[in-house]
Image 1: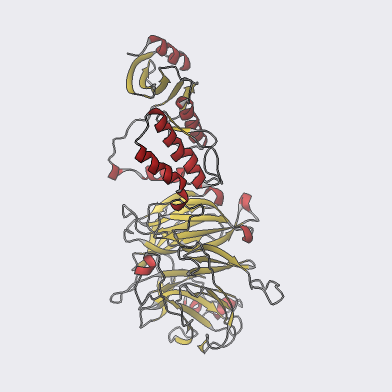
Image 2 (image 1 turned 90 degrees about the horizontal axis):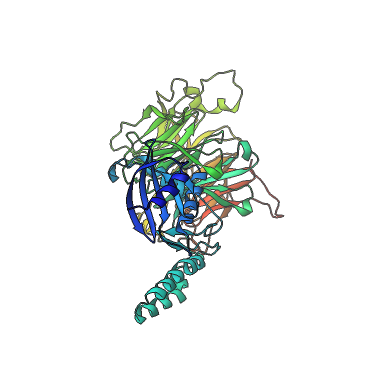
Length: 568
């Protein structure tokens, strides 16, 4: 039975609305939790102390928590109607009676939003509670100290003051606290394999700044966003988490406003890709997700001219219109018809999609390429594939040319129009793990192999391999061309920077064309001091690269006098 004096106090806090019915929901830590109905047919939840409390005030703590979440504009928590040190009145949220396996995406997005809040310190600006039990949140820059002082030791002392445990148990817990360094290192080693990267210029209020995004492999579906304006002090500024095992690929539109991250291994098989608003990289927002007919997962994507080219289930790439990023829709599909065909990657440039198809090799497809105009005097006229284009579009991809890979290793493709000779190549990259992927998956040294093949497409109907670049002791992965230079990611051999100007014939490794290399080694990497470069991107005067074992790096090419050579 609720005392009438309590009813009167609650009614005062509700601007004298009459309470016509109340129901006790719970009673713990001296706090009653009520559901009430008022004369204007509204429902509220009320919590209040029914015993005098001169210690930790859990009512005030819960109020501070809800005020914080309300100020963050989260819609997943009850709003506060009124409060004081004794009473907390909040809105009533009805249960929608959905089963866990039928939970809407809004619950997932709620959890993601909560865990996307970053801080430079461990702790909070007020103490929180579990039930009525105080949780000390004094700020600390050291996770081990925060956990030991504010959680382990605090609870240990609290229990023993009220009801001491057996001496044997106390001795073991005391030993655990003293040797906590052995269980929680002060600087824990990374346990996440890093994936693809993308670097771009800030827009709007962030104009003049530079940002990067990186994916993750065999992790918890995370994409990381970095401020790289000062390459000597790159820092993570936001994290987006989605339901996925792998966020293998990250891309950003040329206007710097829209991002796309791929998804593989989602718990509900809703793979596909997620569209992001990255105009404020400090506060990245999920706009929408596209997973229609993509249960097998999306391994790679590319954004071009308001369309996403998404590698679907390793068999084809779907073309998705994202002019309205809130409402993406499929407009086209490209899939080979060869027996056992497979697809790994796609890259789009000047309306030509260059895909990597393992045994079927590189395939060039017109998805809106420029019609050839003999009056056009730009360098575009030297690309023979563009001379053949003009009939394809995103909704009607048209195959232009291809070159097979009889060994079935073709993993990546990048177009290269030589500035020095005018020759047009597609640089085809291998990927092969002769001993399988078990070591890679289990964070052990693996031994990939492969190289980059320069396929001459001056005559698209009769392409031929002119040159190859192989680092004998390592395996190739991704590549990027800028000017007449090749950035070749060679997993355990780091990033290799190659001069590809002039005539390209034969074994480029033996010809001494290497300008330089960099081995990203870090003692706290997943495998200490072991390079495993995923890929690289030239940006301004720098080269950014992602290493699977140890994360994001930025390097600069300098001459013997330490003067920057920049990027062409």
